[in-house]
Length: 436
Ligand code: ASP
Image 1 (spheres, rainbow, N blue to C red):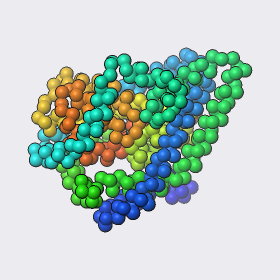
Image 2 (cartoon, protein in one colour):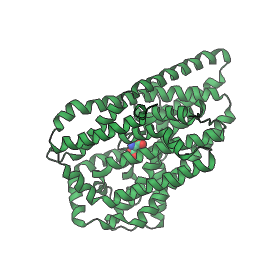
Image 3 (cartoon, rainbow, N blue to C red):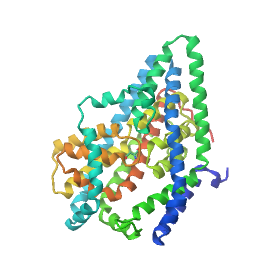
Image 4 (cartoon, protein in one colour):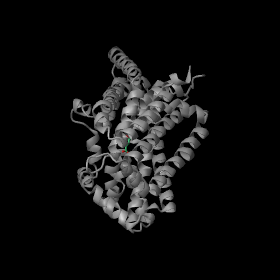
């Protein structure tokens, strides 16, 4: 196949053109045209991806669990998957803490810039705090209650209810295994047929990916450049990046270390996959995660790439990936650890070992509860800050660069899901990479 026909090159081209056009639009004040005539294609693409997330999770998990037809296997696979997800997240937070405590990016932040950033983002902080307060004011078992919906359609009515949908789908799958053959067969074929339709839809929607990504990157650049006065100002991005450069570098170093040490290390140790083979297979999913900042919206493509290009079985892919998109967010947890310590450093608050351990515990839990949508990580960060007695208004310091870091941490989240999927598949003898 010619290189330019390959999806990942088309997406990369869309991203580069989006970057160039976004910068030009901000520079020459074409933001009106971009907002009215370009950005909507990004929103349409995002909506299409989100549209299939619910049917995909439902059909994949029900068909996946029902075809396992063996509880021992289900609990073995479930146990392994969840343990690996939680263990890698805890390691991610620890790496984040080591990097931020070594580089100390918060110490370099001049007090006048701190004041400026606080003034600029004060109004936005209030919204995030309000959202976090809703989450925080609940009893200890509330997350468990929240996982169990009282209405099936309610659980499927919002993409931020993914955990509920995962729960309902697992339940239906388990019940389906237990009904007699006469009833199970038609229901299972219905779910499998629907799953095939949804996967076809993914292929159709991805035809639009290069244009969708072009528009999404344009939107990101122009919205980052628009200042308080509503006018586009490229210098604004440069100024914020300059002030927060060392914080961004700390997050990026952490994400790179986690990807190379943990994912690549585990893949080398526990699977026969070659590293370039892994990256080539999942590149479209990573690029989409980067462009959309949503692991939920990327899920259909992650599943397709793992199954078709990495060679993970339908059974493993259908179980491990929807669960991962919902509960496994290593990139988010690592970023939360770096951000929490950065804010503390900028306020001259020193964090003892107890506070650092609290960060590990709360960041692991918070990343499980973080919705797989853009900007969700910073809301849960407020809860972590409160747990270590650092003023949550401190998020004003980092809001200006959050979107850029969201793109990077979402890419890590999706890479982690795919790596765990390959590892679990191999451990179940269900990894059969296609020969090129
Ligand atoms: N955008 C991230 C995701 O969808 C969540 C976050 O960290 O904000 O994976």
